[in-house]
Length: 309
Length: 114
Image 1 (cartoon, rainbow over the protein chains, first blue to last red):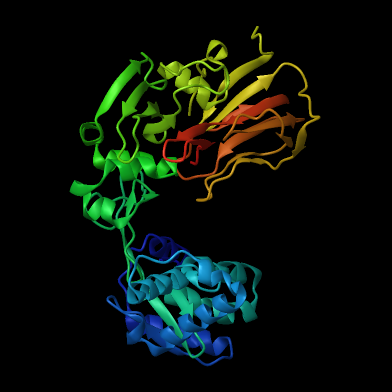
Image 2 (image 1 turned 90 degrees about the vertical axis):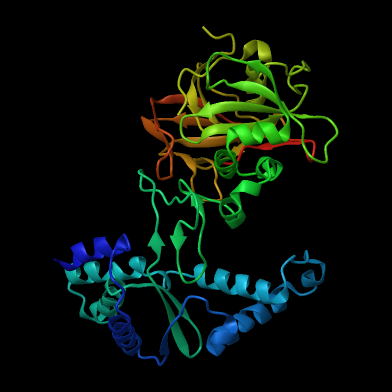
């Protein structure tokens, strides 16, 4: 199998992880860069206290943040997490939010193919060990003052369209932080792990429509309607125009009105509309009127889009 | 003929696309970019070319309205895996309206975020 074929397989995280081969390749990479670093694998279940070099790096970043934001730190919203949980989350963030030199090694490893094509020995000297490390199962690098930490390839669970998806656990199982996705849309952990108790009001309060559509699907429409006391006000025969429904929301006296319609890509969408349109001053009593308000049209001028994708 | 002097081409997610029969009045506009609807997750709705202006006057709360003048055939794409299908647009003038929704908790309109 050619290196390119091996690379493609590795991009799907379908390689057995060989710790010895990864660490040998990464030591070659460090030597090629003419620097000194210990090479250490980040093991599942880690805490910052497990790795003093990691802890020192994260505290250095926190000190830098504090220096840059000055007094703004005093007015920042307080985290609901314990200090230990907050530090762990921040460390996960630091490892995931890295640049081209670390992050997903597939990006850096592909440099080798260009260097080979162009016959650039100096580039091949460092990019070949990176490719070797990736092919042996390294996924992410995190650099500190004296150590380069590596994380092994994740396990990815996919739907039939190749999107990250798992209905009863993390869709991307990895040693930094397991990630939860619903047909490719990132969702909070508790939406999946505590699905039976997912609060429909929390789903409806989410700003991102992709996430909200995922939340509606996770909770299930039947549950969304039964828990939230959902009343249908108007139904249009075209499913993409949808229904106007009224939903009792916790903490709000008057029920909220929502447009519930079918999106060809996102599935069922749930978008809130007001009681009265600010465009023509007319009450919004039908799904069509809600669609008109949505794009800033008077109800009398709204046309159904000839195509919706 | 539409009394609004425009033809509804279709919708791509939260973006409605209209073909204008006349050149738009660009007096109350500012230059825009080819990204018509920006997405935090990088799933932008964008044109492949043309000149884009954003309307600044008489825009309903929570919405955004853009005009695009296309000298050549262009595509309006959704830059995402499993994207909304794209539109092939012929040269001419277009209006793009970004949908809004209401926030019952804040009592205000806001842009639909894809």
